[in-house]
Length: 314
Image 1: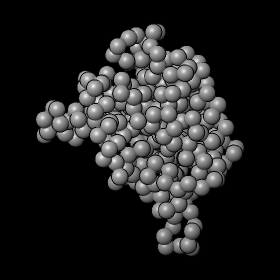
Image 2: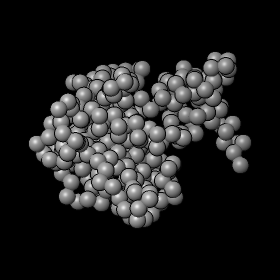
Image 3: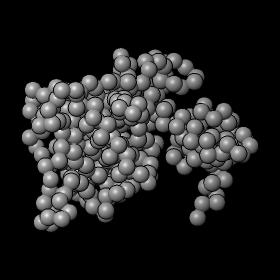
């Protein structure tokens, strides 16, 4: 694609909200963020060892916020193309296709040649990964194909799905998909403007991409291996805005656990639902004070449940 082609509008859902979250207290229901213990470096450092993963939606938003060079690094490693230069990056981008259906993208980036990249972080298992990737690619493609634009100048789109459980990766670390001529010579690619990369977090090898995926899926963010990821995490811990972001990401993650538990137990009694949520949060190694603050269960009851789990564990 030529660099003088008209470029698509990239709508940032966040507007003026830094880090992808509203600028408010860190969310602890006891005190304001300015006085919150979780916002000091020590507590923030402890907090990231409680099961929050970079591949989760709230943490990926915080980790890659305004990190164009880190997104470029990720794209270069997945595609194997060290010449890619990312000029623009947005998070939580909403694009509407011609039929009025909207899609929200985790990251949309554009390189110096106008090629569009979409990166999606997927921590939950999903059956329709390919269909979703095709929908996202076509939505971005049609959004970028403006009236009057020649077909020769149509945009290139690259969709990258980072999958914790490796769905549709066919047992490979990276599955690269492009259009091929099925009736011609085997392996002959068509000059297609759209391509896909499905990257598995289920394989643990020591290649560059393997280490990146291991870091994205790591449950203890003190144990990252990639130097660039370590530098970014250290910046989040030791900068005030980073610590606030971590607190907000932690709260969002906890609330997602809470909401997921409530939806799952709609048919159950409230007490039973709360108990299931508390058990889930204990298994995720969250502090008793956080569990109590989130669910309203007394600390004594949480400790009793924790002791019960310890005695019944195999």
